[in-house]
Image (cartoon, rainbow, N blue to C red; front, side, top):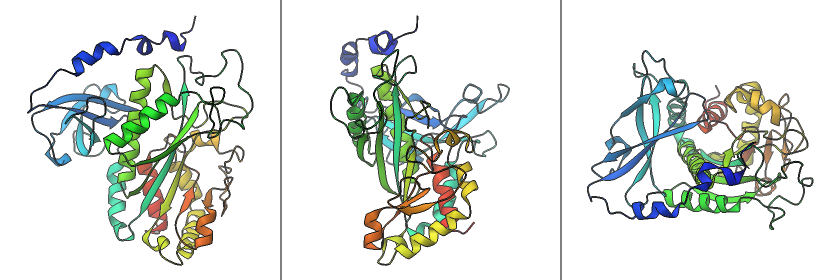
Amino acid sequence: MSRTLEQSPNAAINKNILDKYMNLPIPDDKIQATYIWIDGTGEGLRCKDRTIDFIPQSPKELPIWNYDGSSTYQADGKNSDVYLHPVAIYKDPFRQGNNILVLCETYKFDGTPTGTNKRQSCAEVVNKCIKEEPWFGIEQEYTLLDMDDRPFGWPKMGFPGPQGPYYCGVGANKVFGREIVEAHYRACLYAGVKICGTNAEVMPAQWEYQVGPCLGISIGDDLWISRFLLHRISEEFGIVATLDPKPMTGDWNGAGAHTNVSTKTMRQPGGITAIQTAIDKLSKHHLRHIHAYDPHQGKDNARRLTGKHETSSIHDFSSGVAHRGASIRIPRGVSDEGCGYFEDRRPSSNCDPYSVVEAILRTICLDQ
């Protein structure tokens, strides 16, 4: 017999017992630091904790650490050490106080980045484009699942009613899992993630939150930490948050990570010309971007980008004003104002934001 949500081990634990331990005072010169990194799948997150005897003001003050890369698909057991280089610090919403979350890059024994460390090359590209002050905002869609990998709240032996009443919905028959959404929103704000909104999505049990606008590399840092917080909070509720771009086959919307892009030139009066120029450049490198927009070089997106359910076809590049079935959408307000930003609707929900940012800037700013 399969486990239901009520039989989830994490959901069954009495969380109140933990309170008396979390309320224990700890020495003033000690904090707990959770080191967080991306594993060898390019989409999974790992973490482990250590005690620090000072309050760091910069990631550079924190010690480089290591872990067993043979257990994270990143090294061979005969030479398994992989190194964690701290790159960003966030406040810890679970332990609170001076405790911190530490986002890390991963490096091999010879000092080269691991295959899934996309941040390092992204940062190099961002630095070359910094005069254009590139802003990014990412709309992260995800789906809540029960322990049977069934969308949370769906009938066990059937399906909910057709899509239509669920988007931005209100009511117990339209919305499932709002408690996780609320907890995640507040945790992001506390941590220092630049989260700017959230809403229920088109498919029941599917949600979205938005991060940005962020300058350059910080969009990737904030999005990865927001994903860590989402998985960590869902863990406490005994629910799984999946970033699969098409968790349910059939007449159901998939999940994306629509990426909003703006440069200094685009934000100035008459910037619509720069937006149109950027779109023209993007049209010439469609396949390269498709490969960069999900961890499996387009295979995941092939299930989502079908030309249906508010998506473009993975095989064709298109653009349009207020067109949610296009590869690139120019918002109606941007078209009216003549400046602002554009939205690339192709990145999948499980994309690596560093790869997305690097691909976009290489194309629109560096002409590579």
